[in-house]
Length: 240
Image (cartoon, rainbow, N blue to C red; front, side, top):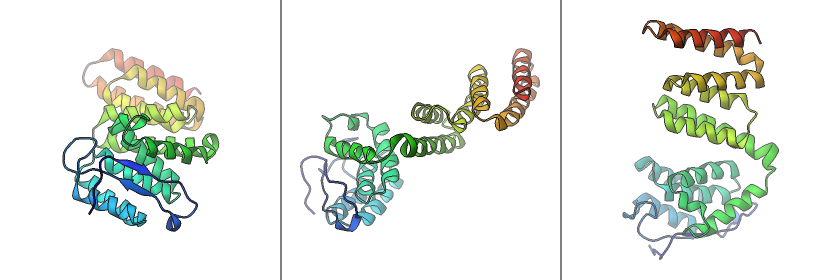
């Protein structure tokens, strides 16, 4: 297997995956860590360069299972998805690479040409009515997964990104409010619950019940101020 000097994704976005002629170059070390590249990732480069994009995606998945923080694997998988016109999956994978290695977002990064074509893919879509809502939902889904794993800071960050993309989705505020409440950030949680209820009044009773349960738990710990604040906020939500 031939390995090259630097990671550069050289591809165009065709209409059909099977007719693509995209190529990828990589060296034998990960651009994220400087350590030897996972053998799965090396195989994924070979598959990509042979136009076997489905196999490249599968092999990148294997590399990510071995190291969930391998930005290079996410970037290559995103490229393969984009070449196959699976734009939403490609965007999600590339976004993960950007978070793990912010340098990938810069045009002076080793993957600058990948980034350019990724942006070309985004431009092909109606980013207001199609891309942004779908992308925001993906961030909220990831936030809930991270909340279940106990990674609350990153869960909140995912919600922040969802809200930055689409600021009028109640689901994003609801999710962030629940995570903030779990962290004990009561004032911020209440603000998010109110915003969610303003956007989707049917969720007001759910958030009121959440605050009442939290107040009950705090009462057993003797925190009267929090109990009063949560009950007052719950009552306000129920009056909507």
